[in-house]
Length: 180
Image (cartoon, rainbow, N blue to C red):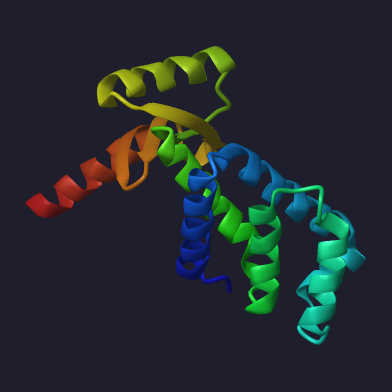
């Protein structure tokens, strides 16, 4: 299991360095590209994640592959994970880094859960309404869950708006149980 708290610490440190270098977007893209390159080939991924391979050998191979092609902050982030034997944190650290970058730009993740797929226009309309209500910018992600029967459930961080039929039925059942 990946330690999200530890990944967040690494991501925070990298994000701070990227901000100081005024290269948040570029470093994020380069880290993602390096991670994708590692994951693209099963043998490369196995080499990167294998605990039995000497970490100095990993550092040498990764430096040779990426040096001169990516920002030193991105390269040294990857090498630090290898030195500390935290290679498995790379993907989770990237997720946390991108979340920090979004927050830095004043953007939050908006998860819209619907019983059916929404059109781009419907998704845009929901996004605009929520942005108007909260005065923030959001990046929407649509999740389809047919169990909701109908309506929408909107999740923004730790806030939740439940306008689904299933949610209303659950609320009705709770209120009926409370009156008995």
